[in-house]
Length: 469
Image (cartoon, rainbow, N blue to C red; front, side):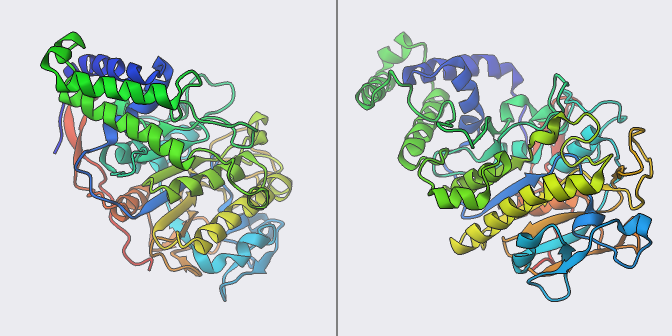
């Protein structure tokens, strides 16, 4: 099942833009709505399941956080001690105390593995579930990038609420100083028209809002309704269709989808945190990541199938070790900057989903593009790695997986004594992607048209992990 219709896109885009102008939307706002309207199907069946995909940009040190090796030599095990958790026999880093209390709700999938040790291509592998297509010579996006999981769900996910089927927030992952986003986050060779709905900005800020999901200030509800009535009159009249530029059935469908998106957003405030109690916002932490997770919970409550939350924090300006990329001062950075922020927000998120009865149907996955070297100071890819840091290590790393039928309080898979290689139950990014698609009710055997190589491709070639329950 695939289609190739690039020759029709310019005409359809013009028709859609013309129809949406009746709503008073700008060209920029139309681009935001584009993926959402393309993704909708008027015959879509209800979907009760969601996934929140949390990407920890930079590559967290698995061996210092959730796959600790206390009996290994000091240059392997590092400086941190482990602590007991809510799950008997499973221990976490001492700097994740709140997460330790929620250990009964999630699984440590310790056997993630692939072979790519460069950030951009490795990010692409995890975002898309496919081995990188070329040599690892750049971190930045290319037109031939594989489509991301978020783009696949934009195309094949089904949302019956009028909201997009796939949302990314609060940004596309990108290194400071580079002019393009990191590889593998959008439609790529499947077509950029399938890009997910991007919610960009800082949810911490007062008055935070998403463009395109609310009526412009100059368009009142009464004026909005009059425009709807005008559209209905034009659609019902053959002469009107000619006068309006042949408003086609395709345009009507997309217009109706945009209407539902605006109306649903107005009614539920799904994209706003203003209705959240101050205590809840504090529980998540007044950080960009914490408030992004809180917004993700609101989107799950509104039945959006896939929400991707990309890590962002102030360490982005560290030229040597931005985000989780701890090439120097690995231990103080984890202890003082990264762990407290993640511990507070992610533990609150799991607890909140559980208390609201959402965790049973919501699959939560958190991981980076790879782990870190089992030996401190070992240089494998980045020559700026210092004796106090850990370099890139894709051969073994950990994903945190919760909800959606996954049994909490367990460790799935295992690594060798030094945490360097997978010893049991290897899981590739392709397997993880296939498992998420299966949870969302999307058949991995469906195909899309590869516009770069002009051939059909399956959504995923991975195996579905069936034994996490």
